[in-house]
Length: 156
Image 1 (tube, rainbow, N blue to C red):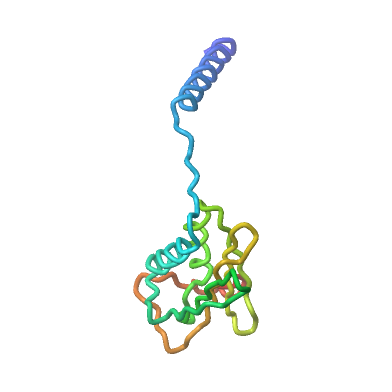
Image 2: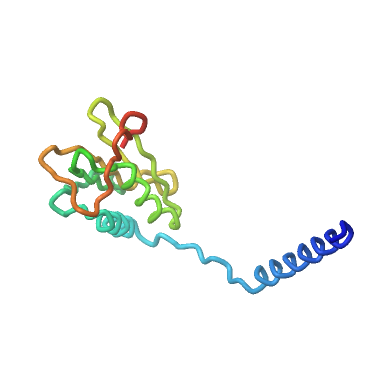
C-alpha cells in the first residue's frame, strides 16, 4: 500500500470519527445535576455506604452536636475490625456524595490510626465520621481488607 493511499485512508477515518463524535454529542442528553434538598439526604447516603461495606448498625454510634442556635451536625463513631480498609470506606462514601456537590476530607491520627472523615457542603461541615479500630471485631466476609504489606506504605 502506498504512502499516499495510507494518508487518504487515515484522513477518511479521522473525518468519519469526527462526524460520529458530533452526532453523539448532538443526540446526547445533558447530565442533570443532583440537588441536595435537605441535609437528611446526607444521612441516607452515609447509610448506603455502610450497607455497601456491611457495617452493622451495632458498630455505629450517632450523636448530634449543636454548632449554634440554627445549625447542628451529626457525628458518626464507627468501630471497625483492625484489618478493615478505612480508605475503601472513604472512597465509597465519596462516590455516593460527590454527585450532590458534597466533598469529603479525611485525616488520620497517629499512632492510633483513627480516621476522621468530614463531609462538606458549601464550605460547611455537615457530617463527620470517626473510624476507630476495635480488636474485638472480626472482619466480615465481604468487607474490604488491608492487603499484606499495605500498611507499610499506606494508611487505612
